[in-house]
Image (cartoon, rainbow, N blue to C red; front, side, top):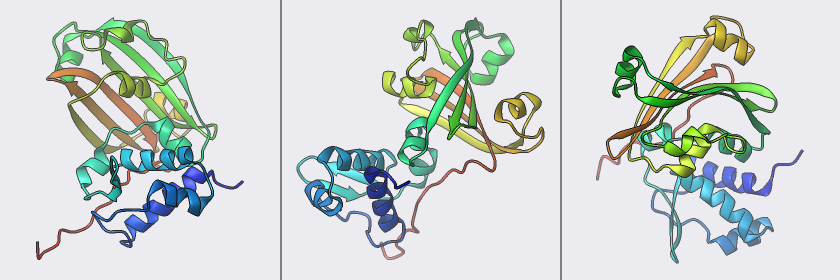
Length: 238
């Protein structure tokens, strides 16, 4: 099956940036030039460029065009990514399932662990993400209801919790930790893998103006996922 045109545009531009053909600060072709090159619509080109901008690989400037961004390893590796959007951009089928959801209050130990007040009221959601029908990630999320009151009644029927939060709540700071862990029994069952098999565990907390928005743990099977960033060494003459 041939790739969607927006995916081809994305991958072609990404490759030219990654291999150094297009350097930081260099203008990439205008949208109309890409339309002509790929024989597609402005909407298709815009979809690819928006995804590249979202990855921090290009900067779009009104009336001036798009330019290769200055590489920032922290931003490219540690950015807040949308699992579904990334999968669909790469040409894969994506779906998700909410396996549990309830409004709850944190006990003292859990509140201390995430750094909020005792008995803080939260929406506790577990979500299983699928790519091409295969379990891809297990998400366990706390949403702070004092910061996001709309989450109390949200069904997440059309958007996964992470996607919904990205659209609803601007965040001003984030903490991001990635480590290797063995799959525990519950994660192994959900992700259809052997207990003890290697996983990548992403732990993330985000804040808005000093108030925590969400705390989430996302477990990825080690053989089905990788975190990727792009960077270049600093110019020693600069």
